Amino acid sequence: MIKNIVLIGMPGSGKTTIGYELSKKLDMNFIDVDSYVEENEKSSISDMFEISEEYFRRIESKYIEELSKLNSTVIATGGGVIKNENNILMLKNNSIIIYVNRKIDDIMKDIDISKRPLLKNGKDRLKELFKERHHLYQKYCDIEVVNDSCIIDIVNRISTLI
Image (cartoon, rainbow, N blue to C red):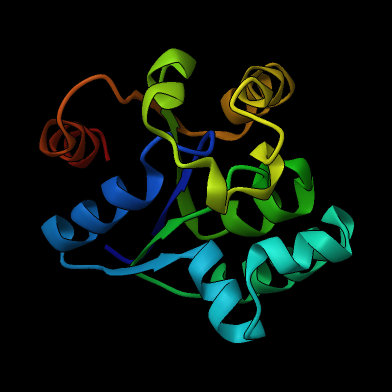
């Protein structure tokens, strides 16, 4: 496959885990955007958020532009990538965009908020983020997949759909 596969969705929806397993199944490269940003900036996302969310979003967009030029890569984005329409436009040039949709109640059961700056005030913030973002995830995706079973089943579902 020459195009990239980009996973979008809420924090804790399973994008990174699904993306990694999908890349192995399809023999593609894998990049988690948040990890990529941290490695290249030599700073944690939490530290970048301490400066400001706007600061982090500018840096995130810089790397989205870079990553959007790759081929044959599964890219797991951060949950807020859809807040900047230019990010999506860059990614759509060379990617199939998949919305990994997972029930908020399921995310709240197992998400580790200690590494998620937008959730530092508690898991209830997830419900607000979902209300703000769900329509954008649906608007920008080519395919929506519900994360409601084991990872291998989701990976197989995605590989069949693409």
